[in-house]
Length: 179
Image 1 (cartoon, rainbow, N blue to C red):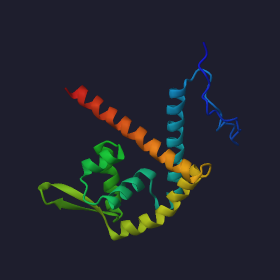
Image 2 (cartoon, rainbow, N blue to C red):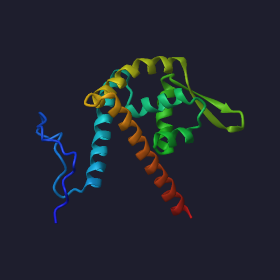
Image 3 (tube, rainbow, N blue to C red):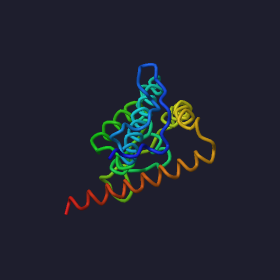
């Protein structure tokens, strides 16, 4: 028996490069698979447009995100920042080293542990971040242009709930494998 097509299926609209960007699920996909596919596609597209919009600052969306998190939560350790950005510590070390080299980030000793360092954006980093925010906000506007205010709030709530569930599963899976 064929899976039931996704109830929210949209009509097909051809993209200039020939890709059907609003096509519903492929016949062999069930709802859950289609949601994972749609989220992954949005993630890839968001990173691609983010990287394009941030080119003038020679920044990637990943670097911007790390700098934004540091601005909102100064004095995180490298390990804390890598967990918040969902990247390996080695990747975060590379990102922070690049940001530090550009004068956007400083490392400071943590008072509770001499060996640990805190990360904090510099004034130069905060200034660049303010400029980049405008470009990143354009991405948000693009994503939400098909939604009204209530739908935006609902989508935000649902996506954050889904993220928390997946993050919990990651933590539980990681803990069970280390036992």
